Length: 206
Image (cartoon, rainbow, N blue to C red; front, side, top):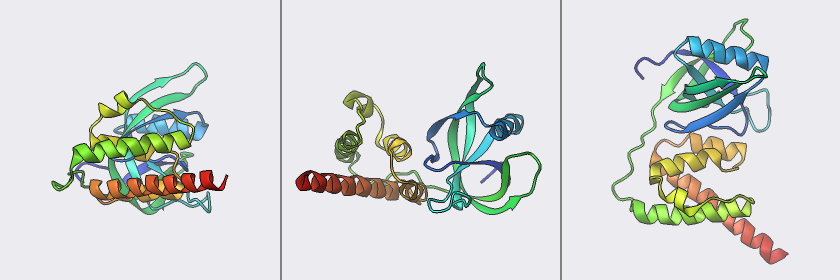
């Protein structure tokens, strides 16, 4: 990847994933991460997002996503409200020792192909996907308007739902590690189908 730094500040956060071309709003309040944002703002506005391991919060997954700060504001109580735009997936090589208070890693970048296969019937796939999204969110006591989903193209809808749906840490990581948009589509639809079967099973038992 051209012009992306080999050493980046990293924000470890379980349950929060950023995908390339996705947008992730963050509320930064810990002193060390405020220092991280200050550093990023002075150095190309880049921060790596990565999840902590589901079984051991002290360990990190080795795949994350580099994000660029596209907007930020400072609050009266000394917090940062920022938006990260996904740039590229990365793989951790090793950690860099520093005295900055936040963690930095040497990374290598991984391309994700966002070209949708010509064999995909995106109109029908999108309609089916929206229906699955609604059912999934309803089962999690969440509501979304049809009209707002229909305005978003299928690719961006996949990216958005992969990021905002309340999947497990492992499930979110599996979505992030998709090699292309078709694989992401298959994985997230499988998660919706699995959730639907479990919900129907629970209803039958009750």
